[in-house]
Length: 293
Ligand code: FAD
Image (cartoon, rainbow, N blue to C red; front, side):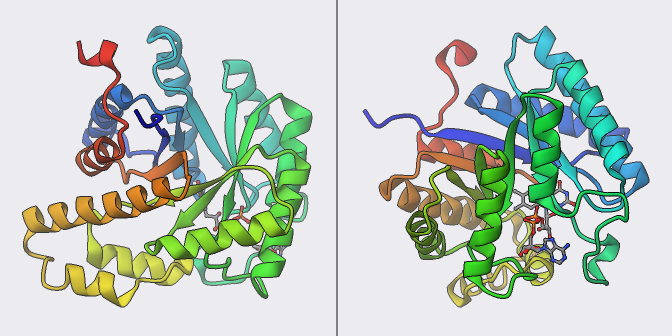
C-alpha cells in the first residue's frame, strides 16, 4: 500500500462571531484527516494581528485538551513591527507552548508600495528566521515561489534567497500555490541543483471561487493557465459543478505530484472543509481509523 502523504492546512484568523464558529467547525472537520500541523496566517495590521494571536493561543489550549490532535503553527511577518515587538510575541507563543512557526517577510498594506523594512525591524524572512532561532527551538517553515517572487530579479536570485532562509535555520519551505505540476517540478529540480536539501512542500489551492482566485493571483504573481480558465468558464453561477471541477482539478495536481515522489502537501483551506476533505481523501489521506470509529 502507498505511504500516507503528510498534509498540513492553512487558515486565516476569522472575525469573532459567526465566522469564528464556522472556523472551529472547519478545524474539527479537517482534524480527523491527521494533519501534521494547522497554520494560522498573520494579518497585515492591528485588528487582524490580534485575531491571529487569539486564534493561535486558542489552538494551543485546545491541543493540550485534545491530546495534540492538531499541532498549531503561527505565521509571523516582519512588516510594520520592530524586532522587539515581534520577539515579544514569539516569546509569548513559545511560553504558551507553541512549537511551530511560519516565518515570512509580509507585504506593505494594500500592496500599493514596494516593501520597506521597519526601521527597527527584521529586514526580511531570512533575518526573521535567525531571530526566531535565538528565541526558542521552533520548527520553522518559510515561503517559496515556484514562479519566482515578484520582487526577485530572477529565479536564481529567488533561490539564493531561499537558501539564505534554510541556512538561517528553516526546516522546510511551503510554496505559493500553482496549477501546473511542471512549474513545481522544475522549481524542485533547480533547487536541488542549487544544493538546497530541505523539503519544499507544494502549496495546494483547491479553487473555492475562480473569479476571486483570478483577482488574488494577479496580486501575488501566481499565473492562471488558459486550460484552467477554460475549465471554470461560465461556472460562477453554478456552485455545485464549480465544486466538482475544483475537487477534480486539485486531486489531479496532487496525484501527479505524488507520482513524482512528493510526500507532503500544504493546503490553503480558505477556512472551508469540503473541498480539502475531498482532495485529501483522493490523495490517500483518509480519516484516521481511531477517529472514524
Ligand atoms: P522573503 O523571502 O524575505 O523575500 C521575498 C522576496 O523579496 C525575495 O525576492 C527577496 O529578495 C525580496 N526582498 C526581501 N527583502 C527585501 C528588501 N528589504 N527589499 C526589497 N526586496 C526584498 N503574508 C502575510 O502577510 N501573512 C501571512 O501569514 C502569510 N503567509 C504566507 C504563507 C505562505 C506559505 C506563503 C508562500 C506566503 C505567505 N504570505 C503571507 C505572503 C508573503 O508575506 C509574501 O509573499 C511576501 O511578499 C514575501 O514573503 P517571504 O517571506 O517569502 O519574503
